[in-house]
Image (cartoon, rainbow, N blue to C red; front, side, top):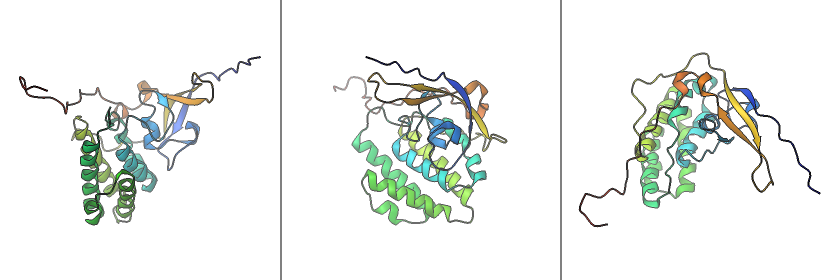
Length: 229
């Protein structure tokens, strides 16, 4: 006998932003990555698939090391993090990006050894987290980490064929403590587990936090006309 379980109706939740750590439910708050996961609708997670994993590592580390005022100041990073993940991972391209991020981290952390080691991806994530800890120890912690974060975003966006964050972008959005997100419990086809599907109600978000139309990616495989593949 099959028992049908009724899913709770979708509801809009005013999500507290921006909070340290990851959160099991939007009611408990949201970090930068969890907010990104809601922009075009998807599972509630601090590891959204549309963000490059190394950039996501930087974002989570910065999010957790900033003070409350500092986290509010980097809220405007959210719309620029989307679509930075390569549709098909490529080892050589990822190594170039990894090295670029480590060099950037070394410069901000004042530790040239970070860029000299050239570790694998897992070790690189640890090196990036260590770099953020060192930047967080600076007297100008929040501003230093904000600069590091936005430079990392520009680096990864360039790697993905996306334009940089505009120079005239708002540096912060005042008075944003809550953002409306539509939350729905969904069950996969196999019926084994339910998950939270969350979609930002962007028409009620400040304009500075709404994603702009994404320019087409620059193809890395484009060959000159007439040259055989």
